[in-house]
Length: 458
Image (cartoon, rainbow, N blue to C red; front, side, top):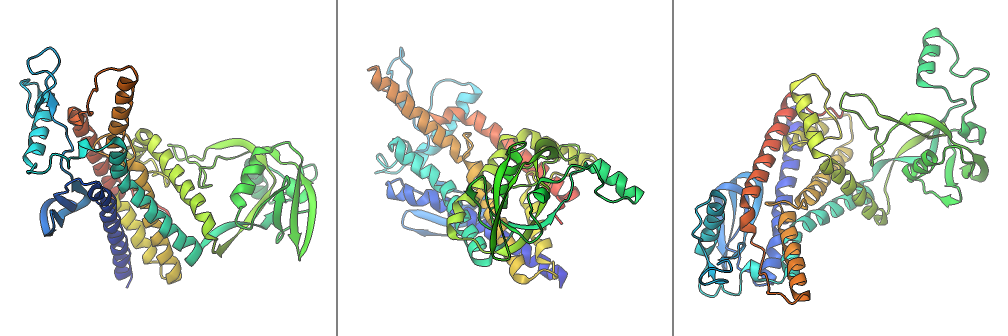
């Protein structure tokens, strides 16, 4: 039964990934057709075509390797022009006379693109569209993933509900003692708090287990706003602050002064930041000595944009620190170093986690399914952020090229110079191949690491 449940979890996430990729390409396909670009192919996967059908002028189908997808559009590469000072300057050519390796790559790409052209395609080519239309087409894919993530997170938090750290107090410390001192006292069989220890601010303010904090420093906090409350406490060391809380239906008030204490550094999701050597990073922040009670609860739909934004920022942080993160993955894969639970994973790692979640029979079925939805939502956020990286062959690279073209043409018009024409992204093909090779290498490393040193969440 466990194996069956594990397999079901993997299949659910696999189907979710496939649908997300297919809808990503729909995000490109629909605006391309609306703007009149001829689209010969819409394919999910790469390699040999497994199944396809043709409707109108577009072939729709699936390829053998379900590792992505693509929409083939006519006129992605503009033809080269004869440089100034040469006979026929400014005229369009498919292949130039240069035999340099990089030039050859660009010329071959232009020739392959030109062979797709048919009579009537003259005004249906991608590069001839206004810049804003090209940006909409290339943004369509990532935005589709963002919409999928929003929909899934809305179902997750407003339908199924999620476990939230709440402003209901679960415990209150009577004193503030360092972790090292606590360990020594526990080993010696002594009381955790002793005369002379500084009183914990929350205890001094009158807070007790079961109280629900309703505001701090005059700013209301809702039951699910524990992270917001924590942020204010950590930033308010040494500052006397008003705090209100409910107890047995009565609203009480007091003042609280967070102590400057060494505490674990937190990431954007409120989790402790782990250094590459496996130790928890610490910072000097405010501390009051109380814990949060966790509850399974639903949130209003109005909370969804904030939660999606939080996910986007978390993934963006990983992408911005990607070289260091990949170095940490390699170190974990080939040494005894631990794997960072907040680091990147391949689809193999995600599938393994999905299987483990699905096989946990001690957890209610509803909770397991909602966790799988959360995984698929997180993958769509990752697809949204990653595809916006301004490097070819990613969507962000095409967007960056269109923006550069608009800037270049804008300056030419402003200073009354000759129109420089469209940006020739075919010249960037060598860089494109380098980026593609790096992405492939990253994928292979992540898959290997997810097999030999998987991320341990449970």
